[in-house]
Image 1 (cartoon, rainbow, N blue to C red):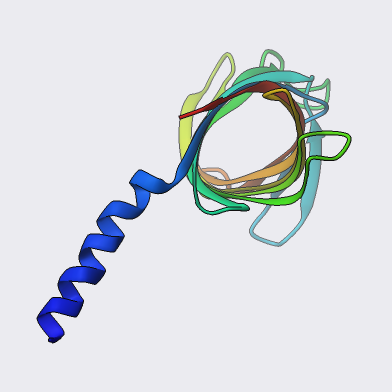
Image 2: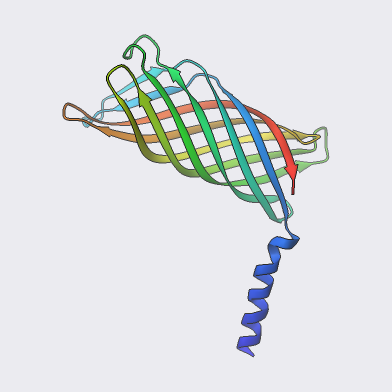
Amino acid sequence: MKKLLAAMFFAAVMAAPAFALAELDLKVGYIVEPTVVQTSPSEYKVGYSQDPSYSVGVDFYVYLLNNIGIGAGLNYIFDSNFDEHWKEDAKLGATNAFVAVKPILAEDGLVDKVYLLGQFGMGITKYNDNNDDFSENGLYWGAGFGLEKWNIIVELLYSVNYWDHDTKENNSSFSTRRLAVNVGLKFGL
């Protein structure tokens, strides 16, 4: 009997994705004003602004429950220059890979869907200037909300990349904070 129940459970788990709804979201984004916060070993913090930037991304969601999407995604943030308080010609960008959750708050109103976004994963921050060129791995998270109308999506997303950079002269921790407005298309699968 236990073997039969285990086999039925295994079959249900394997067949569930066949009955699930899936979607693919392709997005482009405008990052309003990225900020880099440097924390020294003595916990002294300094913030630096960057020029606005752009991003491209793709998310894949499966809806095992009718109103909660679970998935994964990848986004690429184009390099942008620092303001005048940093090294000349310095640029910073990132690539983030994450798991995501997308709970639907409302459907079939003025817009087709209103939803929240939660992302958690790993980011690769890349930095270059006249003297340095490096990439650092670190934690990535993002939170926001979005609207969908006729398979067009508009999202507001706040995200943070954490990374450390150790040199002979300086060991510092950094966080890059971004507020992005994403626009894209949703494709049902």
